[in-house]
Image: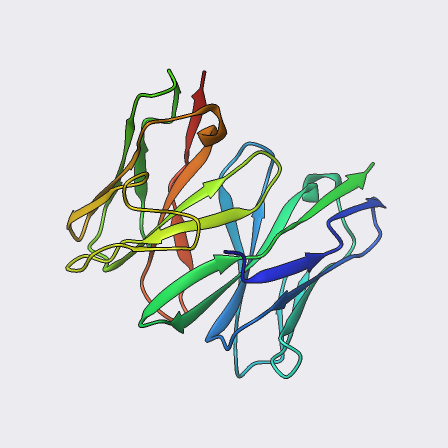
Length: 113
Length: 114
């Protein structure tokens, strides 16, 4: 089951522009994480934001979390062609007596040189 | 952190057969997850495979189709049984050390059923 919905599903921008993608989730969480996946490759962990944090930065990445709206956003500033990839949010939650680690639907980002 | 070795990396199988995917972790970890990722799609959780308990399957996945073993804290297998072309996908194992930590992933098994 998918915990989160991401939008947009696909995003195409010019190199140097900023890219923003959003993630909404359904249940209470301990934290939310963002991953990148290049085509046909493995997952790369980008950033983790805890449920008691509202904003976090890592290099050109800025993540926000609004637990009241059950949503998060990932901003990539000054995008590069190498940022072309799919981006997924993932949340951990304790439900039905077990922890689950569930991914959103993903955003496919294409950065044009 | 954890390094995960997943085998096989890819396979082409005949319909009606079964394939067992192995996941070996270089450290002991309680929580392990198996995912399926269909082309162009996100990761869908198949089941949670914690050592010491039966696997917990997500809606749409059943034990008869996807039996899982978790004999110890460093190893697990997922079997895709009685395969059909609809099972063609990438299957990934993942380990997780608990809340507020990142999950670690194997490189995936690319399965094609013909």
